[in-house]
Image (cartoon, rainbow over all chains, first blue to last red; front, top):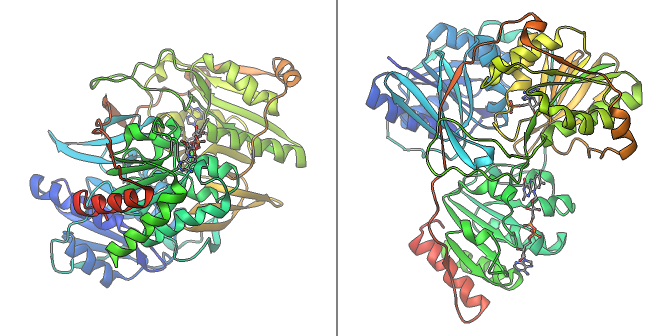
Length: 324
Length: 258
Ligand SMILES: Cc1cc2nc3c(=O)[nH]c(=O)nc-3n(C[C@H](O)[C@H](O)[C@H](O)COP(=O)(O)OP(=O)(O)OC[C@H]3O[C@@H](n4cnc5c(N)ncnc54)[C@H](O)[C@@H]3O)c2cc1C
Ligand SMILES: Nc1ncnc2c1ncn2[C@@H]1O[C@H](COP(=O)(O)O)[C@@H](O)[C@H]1O
């Protein structure tokens, strides 16, 4: 019975929505292949997680809290490994977030099990899991088969859709997190937030990015205004980051963030291969560029050839009109 | 300070992958190979620490000896003191777990205070090896660092997370994975490239390290091209304002994405 455990990430009590996307997908796989879907929560509000996990299709929720309120790789890694040893899931799904990318390999090394990063597809065939992931910055995909049970697979946010199945709260069990309470060697002393309330790039449904075409840091406001109207995250090309117009945390591309939103709007971005690497898996791509020959139009679904200084204020206005 | 920097040679970020149909193997012949861009931050940070405190830097890589030029130019010529290459045909196709095992075998031969990695290699895009090595060696690790301050026997690192950063205190020895923003890597000078040729470069096999080639935990089934995208639909109108309104309408009513 291939039971699937899904790690439910929480920071300061707030859950990452990739958890519900993974639970929804895991439930589809479980319905087709047998087995259960288990949520795994470390720290946070177990009752709230049980309700949301159940709604998206989880059969149970396992929770541990002692010493696990705030993430650190040692305690979380130990706790997740202890859970796996006790419950023997066949597969453990983790969001490919800052936390998940750290936790996955940490727990995998403790368990001596396979770990697959940044997956966008998952199949169960002939008794084995087949995981699809982009490599070479999305220039090609690879399908891999983990040879251990459990196998830990990190899933890229927005790769799957969350489905509200309307289920009741998942029955809750607490578990012994092993040595999770012992003091870690590396201690998170403080968490500093950059600017509050900003929509996170890698999780956003919509991303609006600006490139060198915005001409100067003062014009990044055009990007931020459109992003605000769409409740989107604001991104940038490396040209804009290297010029010092915005912080590196906004960079999209091979050496920046990888995003896969429903809608990606590239403004004044030429579409260099390294930029495409970070956004070409977006579901719908819009390019606004004054050069009709810019390579970005080769990957765009919709293109507008024009001056962004004229187009963006009008587009922001029109969006506000539509979204009220 | 004894510092180890683990580096990988990867295809240049401009590389185009021409894959018309699914294939069991990816033909990588003819790719231009460079130092993994994230590893350059690790090398630079090691050199800055050495400049401030003295010490010795060893660059370590697992891969074919064709990596030599890259090691010379981008590691030894900018300040690393020696290089170790594990070149073993038995490691062809090794996954992250296997490469991590081999790196551990090299790292165990000396006592390093600090072991630096890039956050990820831009070919496999996996971002695991630094953390796997730390765990296998039983060392604390801080991943995705954008700032580093060394104390006496300890360090403080800033770790990038969504919408902010964690400030982490960690004792030495430790493993760090380096993210863009940590520093600006320097370029090698011509005289230093010449001099780098004199620095020791050791080439070893798994047998030399006294380990059996580790098994991979993940099997590669096939590579495939990403799905092709449809043609671009151009939005045209009499003026920019009208085009903007039409774009908003299409995105709302037809694409249903806003
Ligand atoms: C190792 C490596 C890693 C890299 N990683 C990344 C990465 O992660 N992300 C990334 O983005 N890049 C990356 N790059 C850089 C990449 O190669 C390009 O240089 C960069 O993406 C260009 O940014 P841009 O499109 O904003 O600028 P440009 O290429 O200069 O394009 C500007 C565009 O704006 C348009 N424009 C100008 N004025 C207007 C206007 N008024 N209205 C509308 N359009 C206008 C122009 O027609 C042009 O197409 C990397 C490069 C290397 C070598
Ligand atoms: N073959 C290798 N030899 C030495 N170091 C490596 C090798 N592969 C990866 N690394 C290091 O591990 C980091 C993460 O790689 P990866 O987990 O493959 O994405 C890289 O940035 C390098 O620092």
